Amino acid sequence: MPPIYSKEWNRITIQVRGDHRQGRTSPCEHACPLGNGIQQMHTLIAAGETGKALARLHARNPFPGITGRVCPHPCETKCNRAEYDEPVAIHALERFAADTGHETRFIPLPASGKRVAVVGSGPAGLTAARFAALLGHAVTVYESAPVMGGVPRHAVPDFRLPKDVVDRETGAIVASGVQVRTNVTVGRDITLQSLLDTYDATILAVGLWKERRLDIPGKEHLVPAVGWLKRSTLERQSLTGKTVVILGGGGVAFDCAFTARRLNADAVHIVCLEPTDAMRAPAEEVQQALDEGIVIHNSHLSHAVAPEGGRLRFEARPVTSFSFDETGALHTEFAPGDPLCMNADLVICASGLQTDEIPLEGVDMARTPRGFVAVDPVSFRTSVPGLYAAGDIANGPSLIARAIGHGRQAAIAVHKALSGIDPAENIDIWIDETGRVREDHVPALPAPHVVAFKEIMHADYHEHAARQILPPAASDGPELAFAELSGGLAAEAAVAEAGRCMHCGHCMECGSCVESCPGHILEMTDDGPAVAYPSQCWHCGCCRIACPTGSIAYRFPMTMML
Image (cartoon, rainbow, N blue to C red):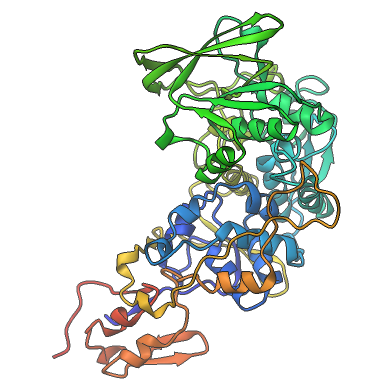
């Protein structure tokens, strides 16, 4: 059998599982929680076609400006280039495309006559709304807050994610025809049952907003973290001369610490269960905290807080190990030694989030052991007919990127249900040359093979090059405490960084395989290398050895031509 090439799709894809073109892929794309076409983005940015790169991103992710800033980019930790020199700055390139590319409007499928309600306008809800609308359905979003955007709009500080970026990307969804009704709390102003009675399908995507307080003596003195972040976004109350203690080791805890520092707190401490080598926050945030003088107390469990002399006396006990059971209950092994004690003016509790029962009032549905809404992983259906769920309300606390991916998949599942398609049946969805959404019913193929670095036998084809570093944000006025920390890549730097991509598992049309073939059975075409004389293949493997991307496979058993 002659070589089988894996090539990038030459069309914009929303979901494609039945196409033979791309049988191999990269670890970065495999690791992306929302399924971004990372290599297509790199190819187009390197060619100076940023608008087309943005269109590829928007086909999977309505919020690349958000995820290009706040996603902890698990894709980069899997990048094969890290074994060659340094990983590609994927999140910086995503941000570059979002900030500099011109948006392309896709034309939806013909109107289906079906109506879909979405409860919640966070990443999962707005993503579900956007893709349900692209698939031809009339969509109305119900949001309890005065403005849409969920956690990115209300709880992520400006220095990490400017509000204008969120407003730009959420506003584009409204401009596409999705209706959004703000200041409407489902469960208080209208009932969930009334939506089920009115709409053909309802997607529950309210996220997790009810904060879990630690059950310790003095818990009434703890300030919930997300609520404090929301107030700090609006009020910016000074903490000059104050000592702040934050309980928790995740992203919310670190956002609280950075915010307290920008509100001029004299001292900021993070107390968390996780040991130093197993922090839940990204390594760069941990380093930023250390650079800003924030003290991190690892492997400690909060024990008590009590008023003392007009301040708060806080105590935590050292632990050697901990675990959570399926219900979310904590189990710890305490270490010998003295407890950690300190005086504080403000103790913020960032110990997790749980389901808010208000939107679910009056509708009985199956739950997971941890109290989240139970959904079928294929159909996204809950136990209530006509009700679907997506995002944190179904998965538990997770990444914004994962909520976006879940919202898109939920919209496709709802589209199948409203179209009378079996949930397990595959539909490929893409954008044609005119910008119209198209769909095709084809059997799904096996998932693409993920190419490891060791499979790239001609890695030295790629020149060694240093990773581009995001510069500090430029300012043309006085320095502001909550100004965005980092600027975006300049165009020249973005082109250079995109050019570092090794395109693992995707043919980059370099022609090395054609040049190396001793039997001259390969030729270059308008679509890259192709097998011109399959019956004369020697199966020598020279093409595979010469390939700098690991994009060539063989089908076994092979018949040798001697």
